[in-house]
Image 1 (cartoon, rainbow, N blue to C red):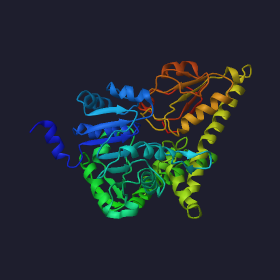
Image 2 (image 1 turned 60 degrees about the vertical axis):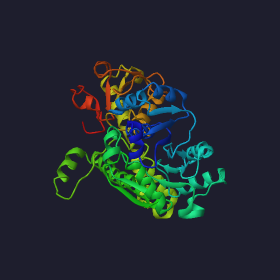
Image 3 (image 1 turned 90 degrees about the vertical axis):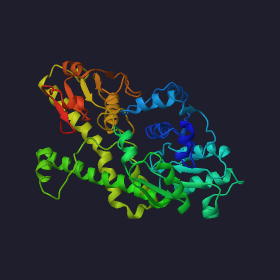
Image 4 (image 1 turned 90 degrees about the horizontal axis):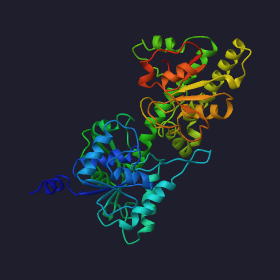
Length: 427
């Protein structure tokens, strides 16, 4: 028996997997399956992403991902494409943003994925929605597939006897540790029927060493939203505490450190807001599902989403203080440096980043130069006008106001600038 034949045998019913979306979750997941000698097709609408992956390169910052992608591409286990190809399992890992400014879930990317994979579906296939989604999204995905393929049967109408199995398996990983946590974390497997759950569990057990916990799709959807909403509420407590302490001229970092000495208290650290695609987004999916019963979750979202405005107010105060000390200068003579624009430390992910939101606002309203120190980026993101990407040393030399927005490891190990520091992350 050859190595490839042995790999197929150990993979059970899965020899080919197609992953729709090669972003922060889709690409690591595709690479993980490919590392188990499964033939994986990764699909993305961005041609440049497809071309880079097929060269064994990555377009995101994630430790160890580049090594795995280079290896599985060179071995022929992973190939990227603009269109889906036949497989035994299809994983949908596409964005789930909002419609406009009213926080209504936008499932158009999931709908587009359903339209893309429907032509290549065949009897016995498994379709898994990995995208974090509002309750009912997995059923909606199955409905779109059924409408596109009336020649096949689906669980919502034919139950355990359906031709196609459909399940929800949300990711639960921490950016910066994705490659480890994809393997070690428990996975929620929520099928539209028990057989759907069981088949999806077989798929993920190809590389997951944590428990694969079986449930139904709606429970899996709500569980993922609950995890991130819980964290959002706790961060909101810390952020609100920082506002209260500031108004009372008390050091919030000392207050939290002292309070956390209680054996049953563990207050999180405040910051400039909450970012990332999950924690800043998922609570609104719960609010949209049951608006009359989600008062606390909604209030926490408002606390966290208003924190960037508070930080901007502190920057305005610092600029005013600086100009009072140097009355011959104007605002256009004041240089501001923002340290970090990612949504969390030591990554390049800027989705829903409050730090980036603050930098964007400064680029539009501050009359003087704006410097950005972001060790995980090689160029200034679009929308920041004439802002310059500089090193920390250059920012120390040129800036008058220093605003710490992300606790990157480079900032934790460095000396502090001598004056006018706004520290939103407790460095």
